[in-house]
Length: 171
Image (cartoon, rainbow, N blue to C red):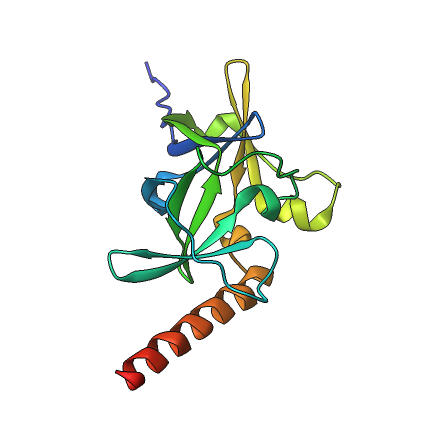
């Protein structure tokens, strides 16, 4: 008698809310979650880049995730959180309404995002996870903080490096 063994592939996601919708990203990409801190704005950057924060000596660009994915930004940022994420190319902070949980989801319950709506928005969503009656939009962080955002993030780093170098030279 042979028994078929099924190997479940589980993904562990950090779940957060934006405009009453649930989104998630792989926990391996999340460095930490912060309560809202003061963000230093930078002039002449992309509209979804709110500015930079200093996280233990590291300058981190911060993106308003609502603006980045095209949602209305009606909510005050005072009670929001910043999720610090890391991809192979960049580290960035993502402003979210709230972080709700860490969730394990079976790969079989994740459907690839193949919709034909707005092409750029579609690239930002990797897939849709189904957990009981809930639908979770899973972000493709490589697209969220790159490639069109790449130019903006590099610009932020260059501007900030110049400011730091000027202040060191002046001292």
